[in-house]
Amino acid sequence: MKKVAILQSNYIPWKGYFDLINMVDEFILYDDMQYTKRDWRNRNKIKTPKGPQWLSIPVEVKGRYFQKISETKISDQSWKKKHWGSIVANYSKTKHFKEYNDLFEELYLNNSEDHLSLVNYNFIIAINKILGIQTKIRRSSEFNLVDGQTEKLIQICTDCNASTYLSGPAAREYFDYDVAKNAEINVEWMDYSGYLEYDQRFPPFEHGVTILDLIFNEGPNAQAYMKSFCK
Image 1: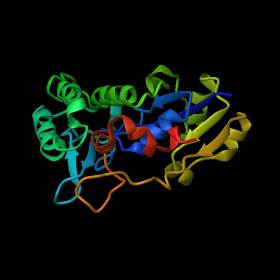
Image 2: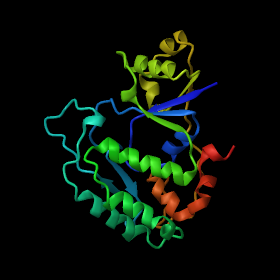
Image 3: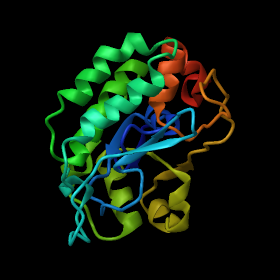
Image 4: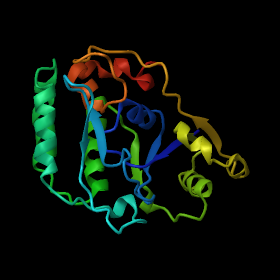
């Protein structure tokens, strides 16, 4: 019984994104989808003494109304030093920052990618290794996509020889169950409720921030605060 999940790549995603990856046998980065502004594709939040702060990668969007995530290019490479500087300023005093400092400094400052999806991919792969997630990662560009929102997703599942599709809850708004039923694909929905709080700096506690917050604060114990490891 093979389970697959399909999501757009996000920048340094929150813990729920990695739980979804860890709950399936194969995870597809759906970067053939249209890039959306003011979304999680190129930005995420960190904790600061003044509250959550956005870190956003600047991308080329003017006149590119229908570009894919995979086609989206970074417009200013100075983001790397700015983001790393903000992370150091707000997390250098966490319990486990020193353990991961070199790894993330390398990812930020020596990153030569000029496409957003490749930057996101590199971070996702590195974070998977830290968390011990061994799920196979593939890109949607490897598949022959058909027309239709649900049809695309189910075709990917079929091509992966999957029996179950695990989806984020936002897809409920458009998902066509009949398409999945006709392809004999079982559909499950991710539940992002019920997360435990950990020893996070700068109260009040905030769940909806980058996974880096959990890693720097809890280190090797991060798995204890993720749902996919607590079965």
